Image (tube, rainbow, N blue to C red; front, side):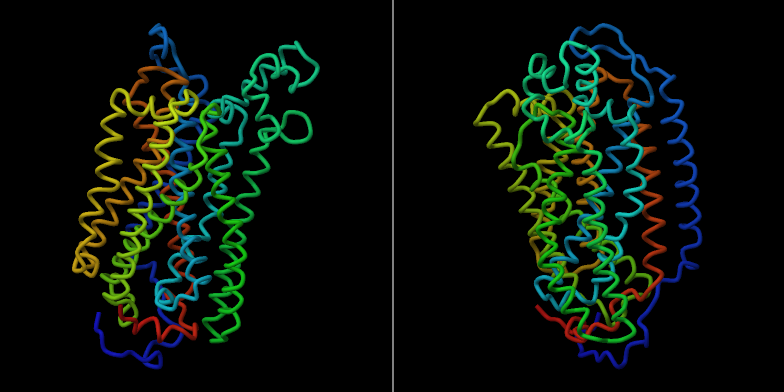
Length: 452
């Protein structure tokens, strides 16, 4: 981590590659977790509908039961959303670095590029959410549509909802397509991944092609492309958040939720990049490439987005609190009662903002690899907790007041480990295919000698 001038002519030709052979034990564990988790998940989705868990009704307190598949549907959405937001974070930092013509980020740009292309495995892992039994459990408005159609009280879904559910009636044009009662979120699901995945693939393709040519044209193309793709990125993540998370309770209103998704994704993406960068440095990679100056810059961005996330999260809460509209306050009413109240106070308010805000203030901390990585790991943890807080409380009011908590947590952990192992394997294999840094970028020398 020397501050002496480094010439790119002294760096290895073709850059340096990740040696997967050095990660043999970790690769084996990830494969076991991925294969075992996928088998278990397939069984839960296919046969879990026949296995019931006893519980109590949310309103009456009467004994009821729900199936393992119903509970696991929420677990799968939770894990899917976490890794979707990490890929979102990777793509955002690639788009921002290119659009702003940032030179300091060239040294570490291959890492967010590789993280962003994980939209492919995340997309494949999200397909179970489209199964009728799963989607009608999670997004109850779909079941309400089915019930309205089967009631026979009106010739069309629109007429039926006009009499039975006025709120869904007014949202019908967005929730359905122009033919029949096909849920609109199904084609949008594919559209989000096409837009986001295409952006990630194009930018990484240009970057990789530059490794062997050193041509400046891919840099200029990436800059123009990123400026145009940022609005598509923003729209995609906003409506994905509306469809998948806010749609769990179609009666809830929040115009700020899309920005909340963005803030958490950007923050978690930078935290993960810091963890990966420091870990690679400790294992002998990035010598004379990444210095304390790069870590300092990444730490400042981590600090800035910690503040931005808190501003958005508080603003959403404050606007809903003083408006005091029942359809809006129900989201926080559920999450501020029972055990969720402690979750909201200690893990989100203190853990997600106050603690990292204070710890990231000193300049020395942001330049210390191990301290910065420890804080980044904590931010990743509370990001997972926020995703859990978004999704899992909805399982309670919909399925039961007091679900079998041990079973529920085990299912949540199984889904998280399964998707995590699959995405981690895909990420490592993608990272090992090319140089760990853009060795052909004309701005590499400026980047590795950055000072701030």
